[in-house]
Structures are given as C-alpha cells and as structure tokens.
Image (cartoon, rainbow, N blue to C red; front, side):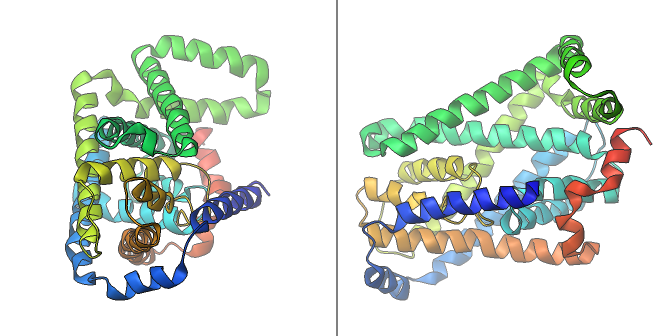
Length: 339
C-alpha cells in the first residue's frame, strides 16, 4: 500500500511538471527541430556519460573501503543495475537494489552499504547547488523563474542540513548513540528495537569515512568531476541542435534539473527533467527548440544506461518481482536483527 501511494504521488508530481512544460509549446516546431537534429553528436555524449558512470563507481569503491575493498570492475555492473532501478522503478528503488546486489555478491550488509549511497546523494546535491550558485552571476539570477528558485532554496536547506547531521554523527558517535537511544527508548515499541538497533549500527559503520577530512575532500572532488562530465554530455548533445549557450549555462541547467529530479516523480523522472527546457528558455533559447533538445537529452541519458543495467540485472538472475519486493525482503529484517 505504501509503495502504491508513493507511485501515485510520483505520477501526480510528474503530471504537474508535464503541465508546466507544455505551456506555450508548439508541437510542430518541436517536431521540426527533432527531424533536423544531427544525432551523430549523441555518440560522444554517451561515451562521456559512461566515463562519469565509471567515476561514480570509483567513488563508491572509495566510500566502501572502510567496510570492504571491492574493485571498480566488480562494482560497475552493480552501479548500472542501480541506474536501471532508479530509471524504471518508482521512489529511487535503484539505491536499495544496488545495496541488495552488493549484499548478494559481496556479503556487505545492506544498511552498511546504504550509508555511503545516501552520502553520495548528499554530495551530488551539494555539487548541483555549487553549479547553480557558480553559474547565476554569469547568467543572472533574475532569469530563473521564482518556482525553480524556490526548489533551489529548499534543496539547499535539505542537503546542507543532511551533510551537517551526518558529519556530526560520524565525528561524535557517542553523542549520536545517546540521541538515538533517547528517541528509541521513548517512541519505539520494544519488539522493533532489536532490528532497528541493527540497522542503526550498520548505518553508522557506513559513515566511517566521514571522520577523515582527506576522504571527504576526495569524495567532493570526485563528485565535481562526475557532474562536469555529465555537463559535457549536455554540451555534445547541444551541438546536435541549432543553438548555443555557454558551458556555464549548461551547468546551471544541469544543477536545476537534477535538484528538481530529487522530488518524487514517475519512473524515469518524467516531467521533472523537462524543467531544463525552461532554464534554456530563460537563457534566450526558443522554447520549442529548448524542449526538443531536452527531450533528446533525457532519452540519451536514460536509454543507454538503463539498457546496460537491465542486461546486468538479467545476468545477476534478478527477476522483476524480486526487485519490486526488495522493501519487503525478510532477509533484510533478519540481517538487521542479527539473525
């Protein structure tokens, strides 16, 4: 029932953003730009994107080192499976799917591997904010619609707050333990305390790398490289169309798009990704052209990695039903209770 409501909420959010995207759109013009685009530019864009996926895999390898050293070669298929889950299933199930496959293949407890995955998302959000704030002086903050500026402000509070909380928990584990037990002893029913205690301890194990300033800096720098590579893909795909915006404008688009896709949406980020067309419109690109470019970019980002992730998922022997039922997997609960 919870999963059903998550899906319904995501669909409603996507419908709202689709409605925003089609306001003032001329489909005949969009079709003209799609027909006349030079799609050969997608090939270098896709190649650069997979370099970003490799960099993302290396970052996860680096984050997992305090728990277990796993080669990038072994982690790459799991990262691709995570992309498949995020692109096909609702509620970013790919993150759980990634932790599930890692436990299956490398015997790393799910909650231990989920902590670095969540930290990855926090650093991704911070880099997106960095892109936005870096680009705004060059393009003008007044060009961004108020609604999307509100998304940026809300995301700033969320990601900075999460980073401060995780850093505090990693540096002061005794105080974090005291806070956890304060709330658990008062508000958590006794029968749920053992499994939740197991979840909490394994999650804290996954935060170990945050105690080393060099490791934190390394993860941040890697995150910047990952998203710069993705922006290079935006740049390559732009050359398939008849417009030009500076690279810093594409950084702004990338930041706003990916901050917006943190909102719940239908699988594949339908609607929330298309806000990028409004950013380009604010930068002076005709809206029908900007929308056509954004749709092609969305497909070029979604299709190759989803296809590869689906292949690796089949190779792992994971069935659709298994992936959809990960949240109800009884082995996860037994792991948390120490069984």
